Length: 115
Image (tube, rainbow, N blue to C red; front, side, top):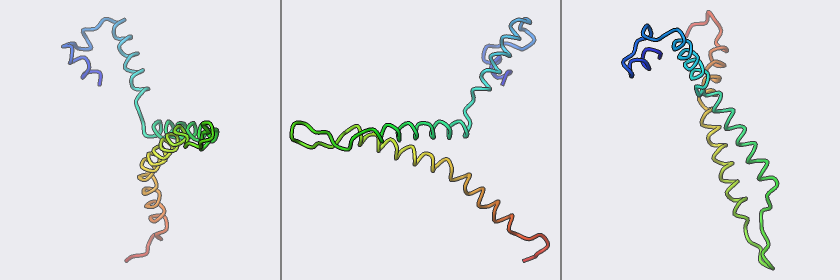
């Protein structure tokens, strides 16, 4: 990764001064720590789902304008957002569930038993 970045600017690591090297390595370290992982995405989706659920609980289903009962548009939109987060969560967890099912199946096979 370091070489790729330096090549873009026609530089080599050896061309940098000591201070530049230290700064550059600090930047690279910070970039690597901020990489997205599947676990971080799952955590984010779970927190957003919880947030939408909390908002939805406090939102009335209908709004009354004078004597008219009108569906609350915000409540409808919150339900749609919640449904999207649930679907995303299911999409991200399906490979993990498949892997766990395969591991359970393999664990149930007794060693030494042939087919």
